[in-house]
Structure formats: C-alpha cells, structure tokens
Image 1 (tube, rainbow, N blue to C red):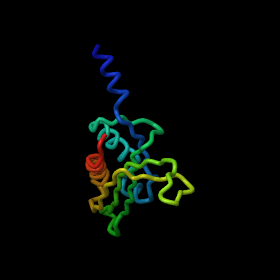
Image 2 (cartoon, rainbow, N blue to C red):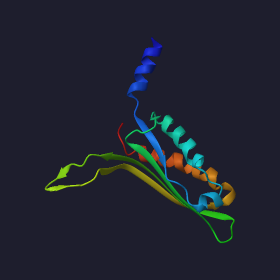
Image 3 (tube, rainbow, N blue to C red):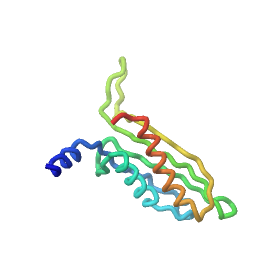
Length: 140
C-alpha cells in the first residue's frame, strides 16, 4: 500500500526543467562550471518538493555572469534565478502578440564579490537560496 501512495505522490508533484545559460569567459577564469549551478539547483528543488525533469514547462532558468577583477584574486558575479513559462499568446484588449508569451512566475538575483578560490562554493550556496526565495513567491 505504501508504494501506491508514493507513486500517486510522484504523479502529483510539481515539475520543472533546468535551463542554465551558457557561461562567459569569467566562468573559466574563476573555476565555475555548469555543475556549479545544476547540482545545487536540483537539490534545492527536490527539497522544495519539486521534481526535476527534462523539457518541462515551466522551467527554472539560471543565468550567471562572472568577471575576474584586475588583480586576478577576486571574482565579481551577477546571478539570477527565474521560473519562466512560454505559452500561446492571449488577446489583451485589441492586441495579440505574434509570438509566444513569456511569463516570469518569479525571479531573484544577487550581485557579489568574492575571492576567486571560493567563488564556486559561494555560487552553489547562492543558487539554492535564490531558488528558495523565488519559490516562496509561488503557490504550488
């Protein structure tokens, strides 16, 4: 009986896909990879009761821009997390979009400055906290 309940729960859990924007040169310079974001993001979503799947709508979009400072010792970053949904256009008054509508359900962002040796760890922590704050804006 327990298995049936677990299966039913799995079928009703909300789902999101992960989409991580391709990194800039600063990622390489500061030792950041896609896994810096994907692993903690998936873990944060699971802790919030959300299943990570491929090609789902809506999706969690992670965008990180990273620059190494002139000394080479520090990295400056901008990190943004959003839950986004594309949908067929709806008429608003007499207007109708020619393409798909983009709906941003929630968004969180941070700017930071950290020693290069610790940037991957800090970004992994920040992505989890941004996901929690973003999801706190939603009912699901």
